[in-house]
Image (tube, rainbow, N blue to C red; front, side, top):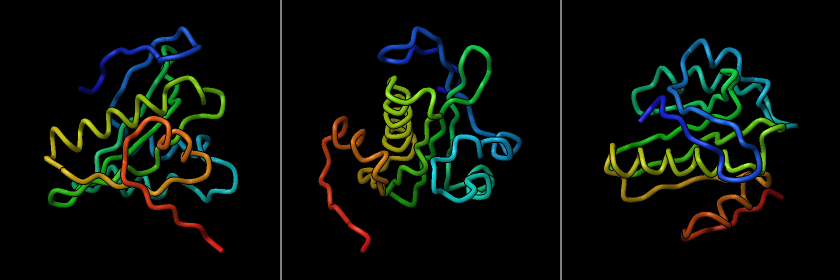
Length: 141
């Protein structure tokens, strides 16, 4: 459900809404980019135009984008991509909200029975803590 109101699960007492990410949004989200990442607006412009992708944004009550996430699907396999939360809003349950929403979308709207992801060092603790998965750890040398 896009546009529903929710509360982050932990510290901040602020209301958030989940909405569809648009091409216009994709041009403005580079401020969410984690340190040492290249421009994220380019890949998100691709995501919002691609039928195999479904991207969302989490906005606060001031209509600021505080998090984004994408579900990508092919047949019965889904992939969680670019789950990113603004530095100022991390560790407040927003990443968890995005992950749950994208998994729900892939399982219930696209009938995915396998969902994969590639985690960065920043995101790995969230996935390890919140998801019961068969995990393979890849290290870049």
